[in-house]
Length: 301
Image (tube, rainbow, N blue to C red; front, side):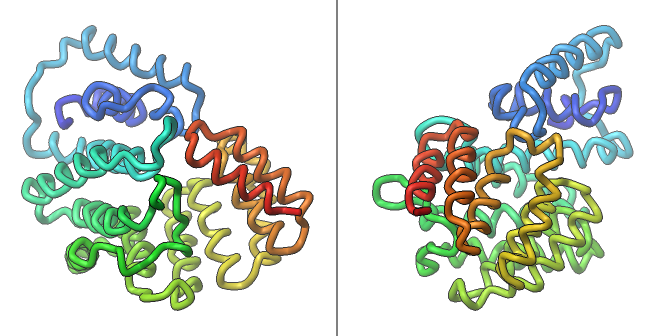
């Protein structure tokens, strides 16, 4: 991964090439991660290969400062592999546990290679805590079980303990405000709540606000809206989501209408909510997720 993430390439090209060649992700899966058309990802990969060939880049492991310059790209590759395992883009399965396991293995290896890098610990913390929910995220027939409906007794306490320890290590190294550490801190809020109703949604909303200031990601802002809705009510969150409806990057992102539908349903605007859930179902390529969204649409009557 460090070899493929060469600084002669743009950050986007490095990550796309590495995800395709080494991460095992398909072009559509990578496109979803970047919120761009599949053709854009295909072009990035082709151009990256041509650039490496044209510049006669040697096939060698970087060292010193060169290795450091590639670290953030490697972290993002591992993160995106884990995400695809945690919520599959397409297919008949909600989870792809093997991808999560591979990403965790790579993250743990990276801790050994870069023990003083706080964001390495932050990423591992995030993956450990998220992976702790795996058994509770699917029902007996493989259907998705949403976070607030999960049986928390099925969460893996060992993985949570490891994740919280990794988060503390990241914070002790001065990395509390890095993007991965912030996401891990959000996951930790859920992990520390023994019941869904004990969740500190105000802190989660605050952490998402800080994360957005670091990343400027519209997906982060959408997640903040969810947290605001839980902390202050759906009426407070809906304007945030309405503003995001004009965001070009989220035009085909199924979770935007899904979140809007949820807020509208809570406000009793069921006809509008049904339309949003139906739109969300039409946008996802995962059959399990499509069934869940279609079911939510049917309940809005």
